[in-house]
Length: 189
Picture 1 (tube, one colour):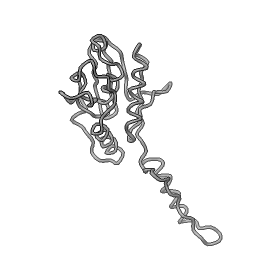
Picture 2: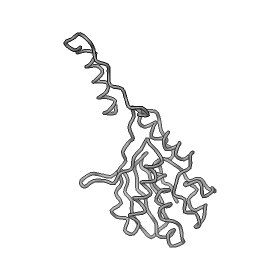
Picture 3: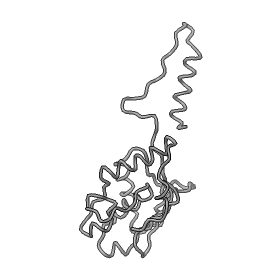
Picture 4: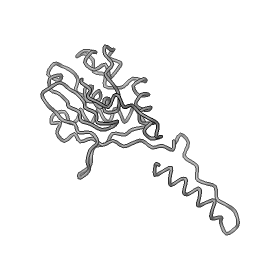
């Protein structure tokens, strides 16, 4: 159970159980307008081994944070173990998920050398860790079309369907519903 929901529930129970001296019960505090009881799941990432791609990885994570509410990508703090390791290497970009929100991303220099955009690569590979598969062939407007959109494509933003899928993946995880499992494997590209 989420801490905020647990706290609100306990507060309401205490308010009902312990009336004021004047004999009136207090009303339980209400959530602010637009607030949902389930907060975003925090997923940490370690981009310390991304060399020249560090800012692109941070921007890719920020794009996901701007795009979805159910999950928040944060840089790992000192002494904390990251959910996602992000590494730079000389191969093709790829992601290996171990479970939803956990795994390793490789920002491969091979695609960068061929002219692919580093921020799009970062956002795309993080998308795999968030439960999205490749969608090839596909237009530039679909982040998960990856390299199929060509080197001229620099769009690093997920489209509405991709955003909704991540919201559903992490919303299911927050509410205890069964989330994606077949996708929790190796993704290439």
